[in-house]
Length: 67
Length: 282
Image 1 (cartoon, rainbow over the protein chains, first blue to last red):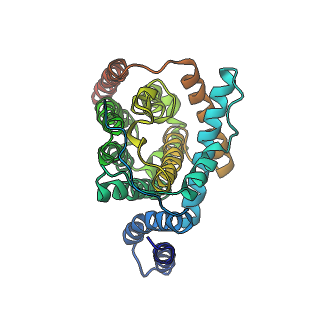
Image 2 (cartoon, chains in turn red, cyan; image 1 turned 180 degrees about the vertical axis):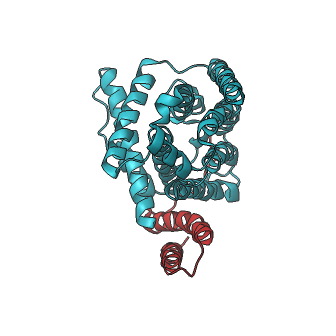
Image 3 (cartoon, rainbow over the protein chains, first blue to last red; image 1 turned 60 degrees about the vertical axis):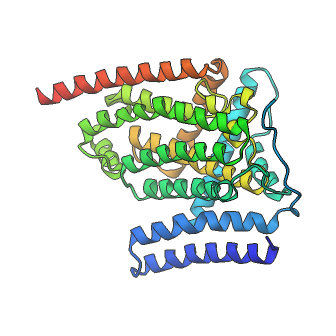
């Protein structure tokens, strides 16, 4: 994945979580919907962030699959 | 909430680092620094990452997102004082996630780890019968109600001590290097997470950090009551150190023995629950 795309994914994840939090505080978004958005957006933010700052990918290999 | 989630992740990883350090000191080894688990998470996230040729790509990636997502939900339930049943439901989901981790890679080590995860679930999950004992006293499964009950009547740890022991064994089962840690035993390399490395392993470490914080905090809230944040942190530290002693001084059981011991405890808990129930009905 291109670093630029990973950065976008992380930004979308964190923006969704923060926006949902603000809307919940303002009373626009119900608590259950805020929770649902957070459950979806937090993993996306974490993995997007990691994909953004990780080292370049290598070539896939076959793991040890038994004797 | 995102800041709290990140703080909870780091707290959990720090506690896991303390866990490793205490085990090492008991066994007269220097052990890693207490922040080793945090460094692990960061180290894996910087590493070059690819997916094994034998893996199911969608499951291999997706299961990491699910793992973080479910413990995010559990943290939310804990903070909002929601139902204890939801947290236990998430614990069950985590077992399925571990199974997914193992199966997704195509490695036999991962598969065996996943299978053991299901075996251990068969005996760990019935330990949740402890909630029945709690509900007999509190008449509710909501954490907020359980906390309110303890404000009036005192900690449930003294009122329903066997239930606290059962819950303690559940947490002990999830701690690394413990007597019931059959899913990560060394003959399976790293068990279900053997082939997950790089970014995906870092994601799994985030899940582990969140899971540790949620389980320890849940135990304290359910059996001690609402604590100020510093006392909560101190309580989690004491709990981790006690778990470390249990892990350091007990050999890892074989899968059969692990399931047998947990099933015996479940049987005792059922008897305790039945006695309580008869007492209440009478």
